[in-house]
Each structure stands twice: as structure tokens, then as C-alpha cells.
Length: 157
Length: 175
Image 1 (spheres, each protein chain N blue to C red):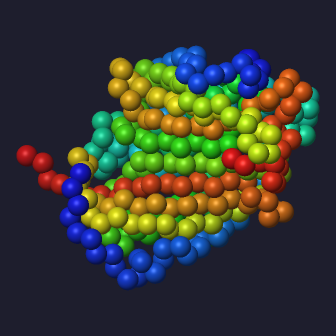
Image 2 (cartoon, each protein chain N blue to C red):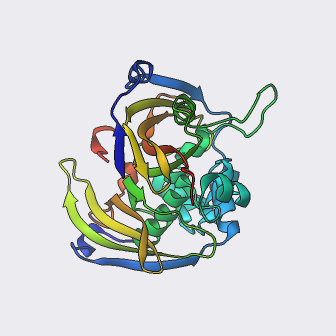
Image 3 (cartoon, helix red, strand yellow):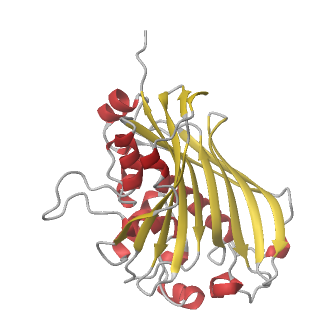
């Protein structure tokens, strides 16, 4: 796992690509880990006959968890996510090969001295976007800086 | 998608901006869920596995930020509880109010403040922000709504906010 600092990044930089084969276990484990008991995330018959979709599908908090994991794999543990905004245009189903890619969209330092990166992320399956996200992540401005130390007025996510 | 009508019933309009369902979590944040969450997405961030590193960076173990809502979700069953226990009750209230049996989430915004620490008890509260006119999508006919959820710990510190856009719908007959 890396330990990125803000000075190592520039607009247009690509995040490493990450892929995973989604299975029924992926979907159900993700739903139960986030304490989401709704049946469309574990009951195939409910998903197909009631929801009108092809299978059970990843729930919202678990998609957020995949994004968090993806971002921190890239930044290292000092990377502190301030904000994640995502739009789910089509569900992610068992059998899908989920690919996460990203690009640095902005690098900045706020008035409190906190370093921020904005990244655009895509979750695609077979080249088509299923979820798109924008993340704002605090990164150390120097090797000694630690965004996790920030609170109150010094933390503006 | 196409808009069908623009009227919003008065009882629903009255709920917009009103705090609803302030609820204390059923149990304190604990390691079992943290590790299960990490396992579900193969999250090897040492912050969640290496106690010494967590002490150095965050002053002790914290939970993955994306796990925030889990600490406020009800058990599937509990003694004395009747029926399915639901976490985003405003969403389900709107499904019933508009007679829309199905629903999906389309958008989600998470803003993170203080991290959740082991032992924290998380309180959540919900605020309905908007409800759209009826719209037709490929799933059926229904309405979009936006619900914000705020999370605080036992000391009143803001942990984070979430904003969900849901689409409640009824399927249309095919063929």
C-alpha cells in the first residue's frame, strides 16, 4: 500500500485500475456486512419477480465500501476521505466483472492548510458505466502531515 | 423519463425539512463488523488491521468511513419488535403513502467528519428534502425523493451526513 503525498499528484493523473469478479457471495456478504437486510440484496426470486431486475445486486453502502477500499489502496492509510458522491445508473450483479478506474480532477490546499484531491471514479462492467463517483480525499501535504489530526474548523470536507 | 403530474400532497409537503426518526443505535461500534466489512470488499488498509498504526494515525482503532450507516441500522429482529425493522423509514413511508411497491436508490452523497471509534453509539435522524412529480422510467411510474440522514456519536459530535435519492415506482404491465 502506498503513502501518497499531495505533491506527487497532478490533474489528469490516472488511478490504478482494479477489477473483481462479482459473485452472489460478494453481493450478500456486502449487504449483511452493512446490515442491509432488504431482500433484493440476497433473494434472487424477490429481485427478479418483484424488482424486475435480472438478479440480486450490490447495495448502496457496499458500493461505497468498494470505493473507499479502492481510494485507500491508492492513497495509503493517511488518505482521509471527506466526501463521496455517486450515481448508480445500473445495478451490479453476480457474474459481472467490476472494473474501477479513476482520474485526478483537481489538486488543492484549502484555507486551513489541508491538502485535497478530487478524483472522478467509474465503476464499469464490459466497458459500460454502472456507477460514477466523485471523491474528495485529504492527503498529507508533507510526509509529517496527517489529515486524520484535523477536526473542527481545520476539517472542511 | 417523462413527468406525469406536478401535485405534491399537503401532508407530504409538510414533512419536507422536518427532522424525523431520531434513533439511537442498537449496539456500540465493534470490531466484528469492521472486519466483516473489510472482508466484504477485500480492504487491506492497515488502519483497520494494525493496532499500532491505528494508534499512531488516528489515536486508536476506527471504523471504515463507509460503514457509518451500519451502526444506526436496526437488527433484523429484536424481542418485542413487530414486522420488518427498517433503517431508512422515511423512504418506506413514502412508498406506502404513494402506493409505490418497489424502490431503488439512484444517488448517494456521503460527507465524513469525526470517524466512528470502537464503543461509539451512533444516533441517526432523517430529513426529507424533496419529492418529485410522477415520472416514468424504464422501471415503471413513480417518484424520486431525496432524504438526508445525519449521524452523531454519544458526545454529540457530527460523524457524517448521507443524502439518498430514491425512486419509488410501480411496474407497468408488459406485452
